[in-house]
Structure formats: C-alpha cells, structure tokens
Length: 213
Ligand SMILES: [Mg+2]
Image (cartoon, rainbow, N blue to C red):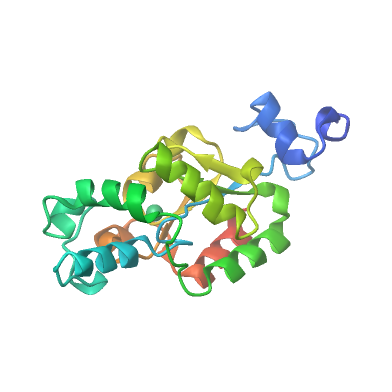
C-alpha cells in the first residue's frame, strides 16, 4: 500500500479524496481502513418538515390534508390529490418564502450536530434537490442559520453522482446509489420501499452510519 502524504496537501481527508476522485474499490488511501466516504444528509423530510409545510399550505388553500392521509408515491399532485400544488408551491416560495420558513423536523438539528461530532464536521454534507433557484437561495439561508455553511451544502437533483453515504427519504435517490450506500429515512411516502432498504428514524440512521461510515 502506498502511503501518501497526509491528505495530499489538502486540509482534510474528505477534500483530498474528493479532489482526486479517489472513491471506489481498491483505492490505496492514506486512511488505514481505506477512504472515508462523505456523509450526505438530505434536507426535506430528514431535517426540514417539507410535507408538514405543504399540509399547512393546503390548509391555507381550503384543503384538509395530513401526512397520514397522503397517497403513496412521489408525485405531489397525486399524493395531495391537488393538481395545482406545484404551481401553488412555486408561488409560495416566491411570495411567502416557503422554503426559508420551513419548520424543522423535531430533533433533527440536534441529531445533525451529533452526526457532526461523531464523524467529524468536514465529512458531513447536506445534499438536497432544490425546487428552483429562488428555493436554493432560501435553502442556503435556512441551513446556514442552523450551522451548516455553504461549503457543506450540495444542491443537486442527481444525488447518485455524488459519492458518499446518503440518508434520504426518497426511494429513487437511495435506489440509484451503489448497493449499501443508501439509508431510507422513514416517511409516509416510502412505506413500501422499507422492505428493500435499510430504513428508520434519526436514531436508526445514526446506528447505520456507525456501522458503515
Ligand atoms: Mg427528502
């Protein structure tokens, strides 16, 4: 095994591995146990209460919806039985700062701090798909207010292109990753997929990270 200079001139192990695109089988990393993959944490419905916010939006538009009564699947118009929901969300992002004002899932930010302490802050990224450009700006602000600076925020829909261990509630993001690198965070929308992937709440996600990270 070739021992490389510490981090190859980079300040952190993660920067070194990312800079060299060194993830993958057989990489003779400077780390004794091999490369340490970044930890990627989804935001909506892992840290922020996206579905709850949309239920509130539905209520303001005269529709009674709750997380427990949504239709399964990832089409919002179908899940909420509300054909106009995508346009209404876009308007609410623009005029009501819907993303910026999104509530946190209970305990999520404390859990994030725990993940950062356990694995090192420089390994922990928030990886989230933005609704649109305005949303992306609000999401940066939302996360920075909760201790995640811009250098640890990845806003990208193609999460499968980002190497790392992903915690996400969306089955399609977990499904698209290499086997064993995705954890499905429990959501009302992914009950069927829980038979296939490791899954659970914040506590279970931490345990999975301790076993795999
Ligand atoms: Mg999500």
